[in-house]
Image (cartoon, rainbow, N blue to C red; front, side, top):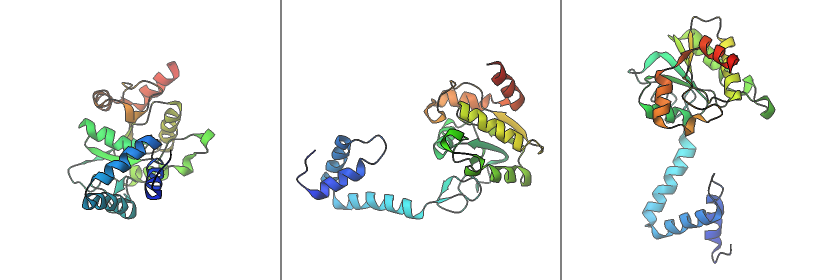
Length: 209
């Protein structure tokens, strides 16, 4: 791809670094920005710059936040007795979109994957145990992707908190095994949250499958 402007070429190269964006799509984006008023482009770039410079992670659940405590954790209307354990920020958005859950969240920051060098120390498991032990938590809802790695993470966490008087449930198998939680449709995910299972049932089903 030959450019008549080094400035456009640099902009295209930066946009093409985004996931799923090739050089042609990046060029369309850059050319679109050229058609906008300068004020609109400045607002666009400022929003991205401010987001990257100022965003923090919630000190309690590890979700992205504008403040030290995210809006969900600081909301007095949320059910403080439930913690939905998820892998990533995108999973929080997916569960929230169902409108079926009103508790808190805990982001692990990934799932156990020894082949990729991801062990318990790389995940936010110790802080989850601390929350379950010291707060009003009565239930941990394991809303991890139904993959081998996700199942392994569920089993590991269940063993870690076995000494606590906390109920452990998992989302129902409305999502196909091997699928990713963020790609599930809202109706399927809503059903899975509403029909979550006790961990004993989950382990039994896993052994029989």
